[in-house]
Image (cartoon, rainbow, N blue to C red; front, top):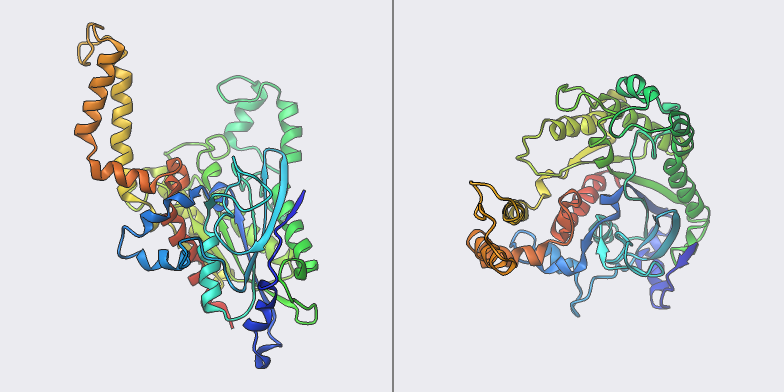
Length: 416
């Protein structure tokens, strides 16, 4: 289902405003953003105020809002966004503004209440490039590179050593009960979202004028950059990437797949030198000690160091934008949850050892425990900055806003 956002007549003149007579020969700059749920974006617009709490990001918030307090609408940057809810895919087109994040739980006929990195990516490009810009975004939650976005040049999905040993036996936790059915479904799923991504980009580029008011085919366009933000489903897949936490090269296959993804995207879009940004997964921030996350980040960034990509593929770390304050509060909240669970267990080391507490007494105990652990200032910060789970960067607009800006700034040096 194709949903079109109706543009006001005033926007239609933006092309002419953005391109002075001396610059009329310039091509439309097109940027592609793709990935899974964090490229969709789970940051509620309601968390924008939290950005202003930090003097370092306060200027960014001022760019994200107009004088009326509402999200900024770009003057000459537009977006075409392909996403899906369950098995139903749809497209949102319109001038770049807030609302082109995850569409779960909102009306899919108009921009919603969340952002991903696209909003500040578009704002940054809108300010730096004084001519029309088109952002094409394709993102679906819960998608892997090894299967869903698998590039055609990687060939069919190959069983890992773990799968080859255990799947035919059809025994064990998480192992498919019907191996033959699993193989058939795997073959059908392999590369599906890569193909949908390429098809949508080509469809939009067949007539950019449907998205960008005033665009003329004679002007033409250029593919000016690609941003990839994905990784969670590969990181947590212990069957495809076995030997959890025991091998530093566990995710080497991801590096190979991503390198092939870059080659195939450039080939299929006829853009052999298109600049490419890898948004390196930043879950748990700069101080994580988890070997799997450390190894995965290294594998994700690795293609940028390949000789064939040197100079036009850039790895941008997103860990610096992780909300450390929210993570610290989340750790305390988890302790509250654990204590709540302990109150239901009779154990000599737990407060309700003999099971004497009533429901009301348990509630009072937890209320005091939480108040002693989490300060009013921390509770306020949590309410202002948090809107989703940790694997979605806490749904914190401050994080996604900084990511989008960083991705755009990584591509700007390539723009002529």
